[in-house]
Amino acid sequence: MSDLSDSATQVSAIRTMIARHKRWDVIFSMIGLAAMLLGVITLLALFLDLVLDGYGRLNYEFFTSFPSRHAGQAGILSAWVGTTLVMLVTALAGVPLGVAAGIYLEEYAPRNWMTDLIEINVTNLAGVPSIVYGLLALGLFVYQLDLGQSILAAGLTLALLILPVVIVATREAIRAVPGSIREAAYAVGATKWQTVAHHVLPYSTAGILTGMIIGMARAIGETAPIITIGALTFIAFLPPSPVSTTPPFVSFDWLLAPFTVLPIQMFSWLSRPQVAFLENAAATGVVIIVMTLAMNAAAIWLRYRFRKRIKW
Image 1 (cartoon, rainbow, N blue to C red):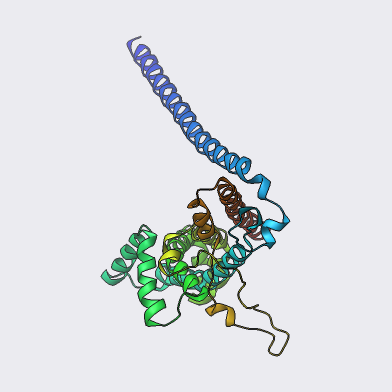
Image 2 (image 1 turned 30 degrees about the vertical axis):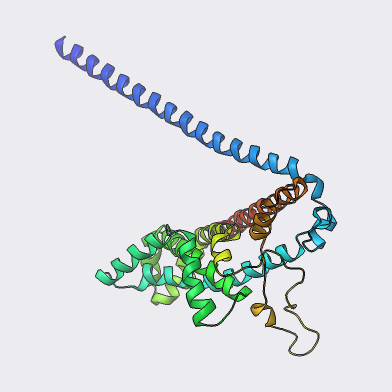
């Protein structure tokens, strides 16, 4: 009888412990849900406030007009074109280099103190204030390489800014690929590069794209490094077109053209005391948020397509 009583006591204690753990799981889930809802609601409230302040300026003329000292006639044509071109240079310069560096560090680099030092520096660079990158770019790109206050200098500056983010995201995505996939590829005679190119990268592409879009979303809203290298706050012309009507039908003159971007234009209007310019700034903020959300939506869609392709 005593054995049965002890067993019943132990079972009761186990059930009580399991119930207590489940209760804490529910509490933690509720706290996490509340934190998520708080962040989402705060973002929606700020976004709606910008929309209410600037919806009157969100029209065709606002996107096709140059900045003006008259608020009602001012637009963001030069700013959104400049932002698009700077982001193009940033993506072309930062993403391939970051992905290649991540692949090398995770798959090819020897495990020694030098690699550990590089990994620590890459991780730390992801948290360096953006103004530091601006000062670095001012000395290197603007003065040493004589690129001037150009789209190319801005794109390379932001490429340096997102490089640590892309490297870290690439390494994490590659690290998530099961080791059994590599072992199976080696077992049938695949080389190191064949294993990485045909097996590791297809499975890690979704994570790499996510890191790339996170980096680009950070770059599109940066102001400090762009101001540091000398972006214009008022520009009433567009850079030369990347496409020409004469052979070879491609022009690179736009790379060295002066520029402005949406955050700079927004900052310029916020510094004006007139209420009408504040409405323009609010409308510009809406455009920046929409562009950022569009990039994130593209990342989600691409991630879904790659995962579906691998699944099938």
